[in-house]
Each structure stands twice: as C-alpha cells, then as structure tokens.
Image (tube, rainbow, N blue to C red; front, side, top):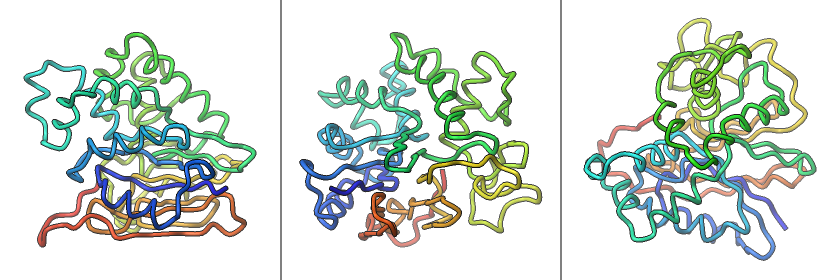
Length: 283
C-alpha cells in the first residue's frame, strides 16, 4: 500500500490519468491525497471532478481557492453562472452537477494523519498555528460549510480583509481570515499578515514578507506538511515542508509524492499542453 499526495489538478483530466498510470494506482491497495484546486483552467474540470469523486473510497481531498470559488458561483442566479468561463460552466450545467457539488462541498480544509506523520493543506498554515490549532480553526469553517445553509459563508468569504488572523476575530471576518490562510496564502509577515500581492518565486516578494514556511519564530509542528497552490514556487522539499504544485495547468508537470516511504519518492508526468505565448498564472 502506498499513500500518494498529488498536486493541483486544475481540470487537467488527461494528465491526472497519466499520473495514475505512472504510479500504478490500485484503488484496492493505494490511497490518494489531493492538495485541492481540482477544477478550473485546464479545460477538463467536469471530467476531473467526476474522476476524483469516483475514487472517493480511496482518496482524501482538501479544498482549494478554485474549488471554493466554484461552490460560491453555484449559489448565484443561473444567468450569472452562465457567464463564467467554459470550464466551470460545463460543471455548473452538467446533469450531475448537484451530486458533484455536494460531494465537493463536504471536503475539508485540512487532512491530518498522525499515524502516517503527515498533514495536507491547499496553501498554507499561519505562523503561530500548530497542527492542532489548524484543525480547530478548520472545524469552525467546516461547521458552516458542511451545514444545511452554506450560502452565507460562500458569499461572504471573498476579500483580503482582515489580512491577519487573530484569535479575537469574530463572525465572518474570522472565517474569511481562516479560509484565506488555508487556501490563498503564500507569503506573510512574522505576525501572520498575508502579502496577497506577492505571488512569484521566493526572492520576488516585498521586504518583510517570508514564504509562510520560513517565517522566523513560527510554531513547531510535529507532522510533515504537504501543500499545493504555489506553481511559481515549484517543487519544494525541506524543513518538513513539501510543496508539490509544479504547474501542470501551465505546461509544467503533475507531481505525486509517496508519503509512507522513509525517503519520499516522486513521480511526475507532463502537464497540459499550453499554446505558445500563453501567460503563466499564479492564483
């Protein structure tokens, strides 16, 4: 049995299938951890979502910012849904959309396996969060997102303020700050202020901002952490941190990392074919 963490799919169904073949995935034996952002930009979001859902018994998925965006758009009027990009529109108007979106809505913000020794998030952890802190804060969001009426959360989660999580935050400000840490953060200050405008590779950020996993004085964490979200960072392995968004949707690679081996093993396949001259995105 092998547990594989897989980087951002972003609607790249063909690359996902290539990767599952490359790792020799056996659903009766192996387990998959998906780092979020299953959908958007790759042109095959519907097929990708159907594939991952079909593997539900063998996989764990955390929500990314694009996944949450899809869920939020699905709450809007039909005429607004019809104006989104074709990739998401195909999901929103599929015959099985309700089943797919309900499954997606019930995914968490963090996956923790203490026996395995790993935690997974889409983007980041705040500097002062231990794994236990992160689990508690994620549970606050799950209570609203997984409840009977997720609409207020999904409509109120957008925005860059507050830009710093603080234990005294309350209401939607608190939930928004938690979601932004888990799904959007790349750089922050030592007190946890998110540098939303900095999205490039380390060294390009403004003074005073650090990659979230390099912030001085951050909390000690007893588990290794795997994450996606940051294609301009590329593959990163160090300090107990493993970044595996290697830009599949931008013509890079799709990466799988074996979590239950003493020395984590990588398997990569070619990502989506991107037309010449296409700009590389970062969100």
